[in-house]
Length: 443
Image 1: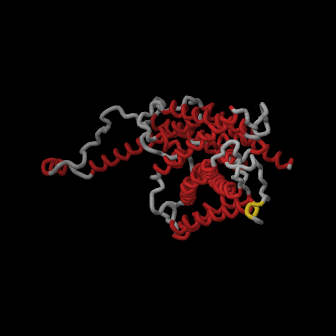
Image 2: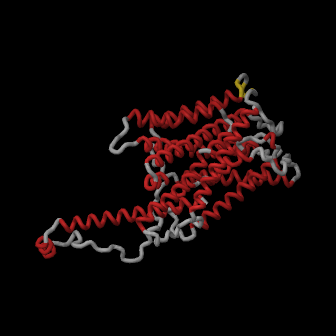
Image 3: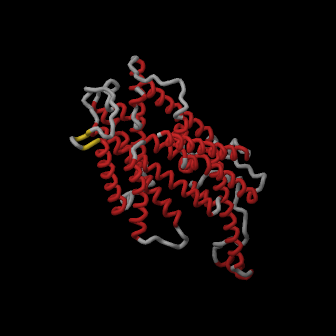
């Protein structure tokens, strides 16, 4: 539903830009005609080619649909067009909190994978084992110490890369097509391997999972995980705009969601029937590194164990640059520039330090994903799209009139659906918050 809200707001933003340009062209044309007297115009027409039109003429030679999505209008730009100053600031704060959560998850996931590979048992002499943080890794060095060593090492490398060289100094962060294709290819290989390996074990009858039919205990956290897993609203402008034929863009997005849902269901159900739930790692790939009953090829086990390191390391700098740029936009003032120290030291540090501190304090990925998805994710997936489409409709009505038809209008066009989404988001936030408080009081 909210995906269709964002697409409708994108179309409205494109219409708004076209109308502004048309008004500006008419103003420029009227100004150009006023620069000459009648004698000047007659003389200019005889002696030199006409470079400016004498009269403002209608430029639309044919039918022009103002709601065509031909320009990429990011959510931040849409917020600036349709929200007031408070709304724009709230939008950037929500994006920043989400990106901080994203970086904290990534900052914890990489050293966890490195720790498990470095400290885990890969000799196939034992089956699945649930290690504690206090268990030894190298002599007197515990697993938790090893995790923090990897975390600090990653932070130092990122700091040097970001502060001294600047992010993506030697290439454009926008042009990472081949890098993204490579990481996508690795994801498909890893996901397909995990599903097939789990299915083989289940078919052989050696699966260890015996899940209950239903359990309400994990529902609040499931909400945050689902939001985090399906959230793509902030990326829709970059995904939808390049599509040449947008007549069926809604059907394409729906098919995409169904495909992703099927993939998640297949991955999740094979996991819960293949592995003992008490031994499942938060990082699912790690379940294949220390259980030789599932996978006894050491090369493939190392590949799956280090798979998050490869893929997350390519995304971490891009998200860090995005977060840094959002901080700059939030504090930017027209006509002002940042000093070199603020631009190259302060902003990168406030980008990197908070998520590293969070990852230093906890490496519970389930909680990090649940909280990030439940709060910042709810804002991006539900609240912001609902307000965007609501104010876009109100903003454009006096400009294009009630009779103008937005061909990308959401099927949920009634205002009831906007308020339904906002109420649903509020209810879910209250439910998740109450569950977190009650869980802490039980402890």
